[in-house]
Length: 362
Image (tube, rainbow, N blue to C red; front, top):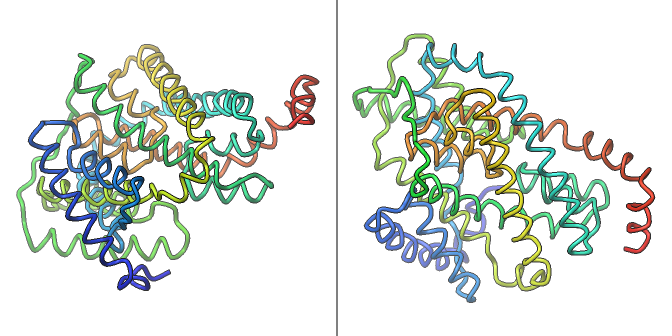
């Protein structure tokens, strides 16, 4: 759908969001918080939205932010980095398995505590895209609303906690190897961003999930691997991408929507914290097992979105290609395999007399 369709009635809300979000970004940057231009606008816009001040994100804000971020991240994929990524395939596979194990336990806990059916809590607990999981939940007869609420809350919790945890906890942040050091060439950058926008939007029209982020990464990485020297992406551009993500995340917190599900929100928050803690423990264990940096593995296993975790790694100068590889593989497996894992686990639970009794009671 064309995002300019409702531009006129949404314009006051968009201007209000910008009027609130930009100063919040300035404040958080002045306070030297991690990823300030995403956290500040997100918290400010979400807070006022929940108080009844209707705000909207600008048209194509997500896509614009993803294209800029994907273009910046693609520069990290030099031949040595890509060669090193191949050696981490066992760790990538183990992390993906851990994501599903943590999600399944989180779903069982949430179902038992909240009384919401197992199907809904399963798709609410698996860290795939909120829309993709909601569609699958609906396909299997679950409630879409709890899925949407849980995903919105979990992404926000992860985006707020993980950067602060890694910045102030004393966990060593090992700088990414082969950090790109390219000159800024405005004409090359402009052409590159225009082509990335076109290819990203085209891919999403063909239902390629996160196309505006992934296509620029693949496109830029292919050029970099082929020896083509691209332009650096200015820090101000990635700050702008943060702002776009912050406005999009904050605008999701519609007062009426969350008011309808206020009884479920405390359980969803606890579920988000459980999954986050369990994922961090799994990431730390995998870091020890595969001799990888602990900060990288915590971000790699965090149950946040691909774009948000990539942005976090890029802002903290952690191994961006490795984080992208982990989350990209997870996104592919989650989108292709979640329904099959759901059916398999559901069959196992159906054989459990205790779970069958609980299901009848619900």
